[in-house]
Length: 287
Image (cartoon, rainbow, N blue to C red; front, side, top):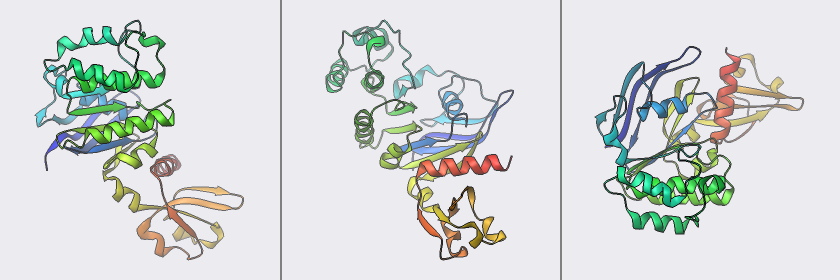
């Protein structure tokens, strides 16, 4: 299998936070969701991948080539969509094209205009006057117009309405129908990832909790509900991130551990959002 990105034992140390031994890889032709609570290390990892900061240790390979600081020769192959536009607020879509197109030898003017029409973006409207959703669509249009084969998205769907998110997810799914294209998609809206992601990397407190296929992660854990008095002390040790209520409890559990629990408990499939919440709660309870 060929990988567009390989991160091996990445470390970045700050005074009060560190990313530690982060390792994951993205096969060509797939979408990887990058999940974790705020402050978990997602943006730090993405900045390291893009050569935007000096790492403390580890290795990063993009397209099979090591990343060492800023690498301009990667720019054309990578499309970046961050949580907010990095263009001048007084620019319109035409101004943005005039500013960025010279940096990309394969800039496709016709494709750019086609995407602007598809997303109903007014070319004369200044960036500061566009809605949050329109700004994201504009950044996507720029990324796709220089024929990037690897899209890196850092929280682009925050604040988007369901229709705009649906359009973006459809676009990403269409993008990876070309087996040479890949996506790293960091988002708090995990329902989008449940729909389109092939792989998931879960980071918590600067460390990787899981990296692998989305389906395997969702099958590994289950949601369990019931009455705590029914559970023995040893059985309680199997519960992850337990929430106690006046009427009972709910917790996450490894699916393989369900037979070890009382039959009277209710078990349900779990969501990515619930996995993040219960893992984060468990981590805090162990501090």
